[in-house]
Every structure is written in C-alpha cells, then in structure tokens.
Length: 577
Picture (cartoon, rainbow, N blue to C red):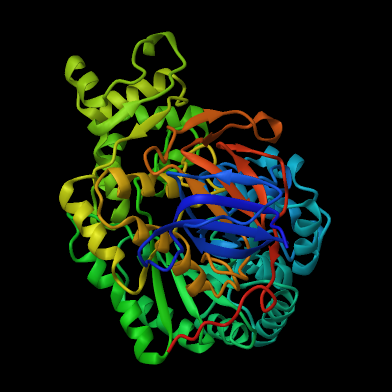
C-alpha cells in the first residue's frame, strides 16, 4: 500500500535521545506508517527530499495560554512556525470556562490583567456563549485547530462559578468546597487534562483584588487534587509566591502534598537560573525531593533561552510586580506622572527594586542596562536603540532618573527593552547542568499571553540553533528529546512525542545549519488592531500535524488537522512513584 507522504533521506532524530541516523519516514492515514534506514524509499502520493535536513517529532509546548487566541487564530501563531505541534493550555488557574453569563466581563478583565490579553481582542475575537467546561472544549473542537491542544481546568473559573463575587473575598465553606470539587470532576470528565491553580501574590483580577484561587484554603486545594487523582490521564500545575525566587518551608510541603494527594505530577512555573543566585536551584528542588518522599512528583519548568520582552511605565508589565511599584503605577496616568516626578518617590522605587522582597524581579532593577525602544515625542527624537546608561551619562543623571524623564516626555508610552543580566558564561553552564536534573524540564513560554510584552513562543528554534551552532551545551539528540519525548512522557500524551511506527504523524523537518528564530517585532494584527510581539522562524522546512502538512518553508498552509486532546482518550496516567 502506497504512502500519503514520504520524508526522504533525512537525519532521523526520534525523540528518545539515541543516536541519529539517515533514513525515511512514511506517513499514512495521519500516522507514521514506516521508518526505514537508507535504502530505497517506498512510493508515496507526495515525497519531500529532506537530504541534509533533520526530521524530528513535533515539539510540545507545555505552558501556553492559547485558550482565547485559538478562536481568532486557529494556527496559534507563532508557535506553529517554530515546529510546535502540541500545546497545553489552561495554566496558572486561568480558564475561560466554566462560566456564567453574568461573569463573562469579569473573566475577560481578569485575563486582560493577569495574562496580558487585550480586552478588545477578548471581547470581539472570542465567540462567548458556553457555560460548562465541556461546552468550551466543544467550541474549541468545532472551531478547528492547526495544532493539537489540551486544557487544564482553572481554579479561578470553577471557584467563581460556585461562589460568585465572594470567590475573591474569602475561603469556601465545606458545602462550597464539595460543589467546587464536583464541578472539577464534571470538567475533567468532559476532557479537561487536570487542574491548575495559583497562590501567587502577583496575580490580581481586573479590579485589583487577589484572583479567586488565592483565597482557597489548604483543605480545598487538597480536595481538588484528590479529585484529579480519580481520573485517567491527568496532571497538576500550580504556582505559589516562592516560584519567583525561593520556596518557603510551607510552600515546599504544600506542593509536595498536592502532588502526593493526586498521585499525579505537579509542574510549576518558572525556575529562573542565575549564577548570582547559586542557592536557588537546590532550594527549589527541595519541593521535588519532598514530593518523592510522599509518593508524588514536583517538576520545575525552566526556559532554555532568554525571552525578549518590552516594557513601559504606561501599560501593565513586569515592572508592576516589583514590590511597592504598583502603588505608583496603578494610578491614573496624569497622577502617575506627577508621582514619578517626585525625587522621594523615585528613591523609594529604586530601593524596592533592589530589595530582597523583589526576588527574581531584582533583575529589572539595573536601569542603566535598558535600551530605549519606540518613542513618541519630539524631545525623545534620536533616542531609539540607545542604552539608558549612555544617555544618563551625557545628561549628568542617574540611569533611573534619565529613564523616567524620557518616559514622562512620551506621557509614559516609551517602549523599554531590559537587557538580560543573566547571560554570562557561568549562568549558561549552570543552565546546562540544571537541564540534566530529573525534576527540571523545559517549558514556560507563556505563548498566547502577555502578547505585547514578551515573545516566548519561538523558544524551540532558538534553543536548537544554540545547541547545534552556538553554546552546544548538549547534543542535538538530547535537545530534541527535551522538546518531544521527555514532554510526552511527563504529560502522558498517547502516541506522540516520538518517531515510531503507529504513532501520530506529528513531525518537523528543519535545516540544522540555519534553524533559529527571527527577532521579535511588534505588529498590530489582533482583533481591534491591538498589538503583539511575534517572530517568524528560520530553517523550518516542513511541519506535519496528524500527517497533514501545516507549515511549508516557514509559512502556514492553512490546514487545520489538529486534535483537541481529551483526558483519558488522548492521555494516560503517568505513575509518580
């Protein structure tokens, strides 16, 4: 029987980490029908000569927020052009379902605040109308997907559904906990992949109040985790304040107990690796060690690249999360400008940015390293692309004073690019050793969120280019495994993550000599012409999702062969001990 599609003469990297070899990959009926080494290739309706190219399993992005974007952008750009074939959403406790009609505006404004999704895009680009989580999944499935996508059930949504406005004010009663747990059961039975939650003090709703999950007591959290453990093919994702720096003893115990109670893995976001904080990794891995003692598994996600991001003093971004800065930046713009002119306010902001409490956000406190992006006033002409430290020296100012004055000239619209402080050789060597840890895995792109502030989605191509031609911290085979087989193994994705006969034909073909990401750029292509950062890929030749070509020479074909991943049907339980 002839094949539907043949990839001929490629270097096969199968996702196991084993040595590559030259051969052919045959596809039939959406699955890998044959894998052969060298020799004659079988006949196929379409053949792609991939001599000199690498063929690998499609990449898996485990931490995305495409929950809304997929409705106006079923291609899920730019993940699709960077070789990603499967995304997992519903992270951080935030989902668009279950939802009562009277709560729709609240949910939209919460997503605008916590995940940086433009309100106009949420209002005009999403076909609201569902109520249950199952209804939402059906709407996703009916919309058509270019990639495979699965979704956790968000704690904030199920809590709001049961408790209404009280969800952001208090702990649940015993009766309310039972209803929240029952709703989680219902949502997972409909296909939810598990449960996500946040206790992070950086997560506030559109009204500035703590999001609903932050008011949950430990008994509620553990009851929900126990419910997850009753369903096949599920997992947990959770965030606590210590994720931003170092866990407290109580946080270590809580994360470990959550995983052990569910008998499912729990992943958290995001382990920031920095040679200037050498005790962070050992401390954060204490949660994993404790989980193993209790029969669970806690996994840290970490990004293998430095994610480009832009900031401003006008629109919500990471600067708002520096302790004490929100008191200034949450003011109306005219009042904010007056406060920022005050030398005492500036001194306080600098002190807080460099305080111990700032945790990982201390990295944002080196203001001389910022590069000025787009400017909007005559006073700032010629400053784009310049380093703040240099401008400050010319003006006889401290860097923060120069930065704030520039922003005030633009009514705070100035785009700021913070240059990384953690790109030294020692830090990269520390990253390389961390990636080898059993309880650390790649992830945390936040693709689909913080759309005009950061661009994490292109990380697979940037990472592979760095490992092949740049820092070479690991072999090509190991790098591909971390993006594919290792992901499928942790999340129990059936018949995905590897190049094996009978597996779904999620496949990427790339040029190892050129694979990379383009630089991120700001484009206004969201509903309502809202802006976002995006980047094309370099060296991605072909991407197949379930055997159908979705990317050809870096551009989308328009095909939508993706599968909505439902728990139990498309996933299986992964033992934690």
